[in-house]
Length: 193
Image (cartoon, rainbow, N blue to C red):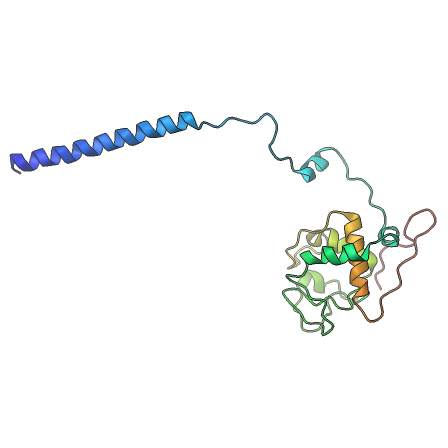
């Protein structure tokens, strides 16, 4: 190595060291300028987590009672979240999920041409009556652990009733709404048909 080569090498090495020092220095300055701090209260509180922490969930009015005041137009609007996977076309066409035309009181897991998960197939012999629809729409994964349905569920009980009432209208002969007792409770437990 000649003297000229070693001088050039030293210049390159020196420039690299200066660049490293500038980088570290700028990082320290930027870190000091934009240092975060811990918030005393969360910027965004998750309501569901607070509800769980505050104690047991409030009792939900039975579906038979909620259906008496269901808003079908609001149910159609709520169906907007379902449209990407389900159809209510009269031809019964399946999408990612089964077609929902004539859903109310249909036997669970029997829509033609749809490949159901074993979690839903195990419910064969039962029907999509008011109570089963309400339970499924509350939390599909709790109702049928292992279901392919990725939707988390509808937490608002009246929104579920609205949606179920609208789904009932998606039939040439909608099922009659269940009667609520004078005490405000459903007349019977979920049916197993």
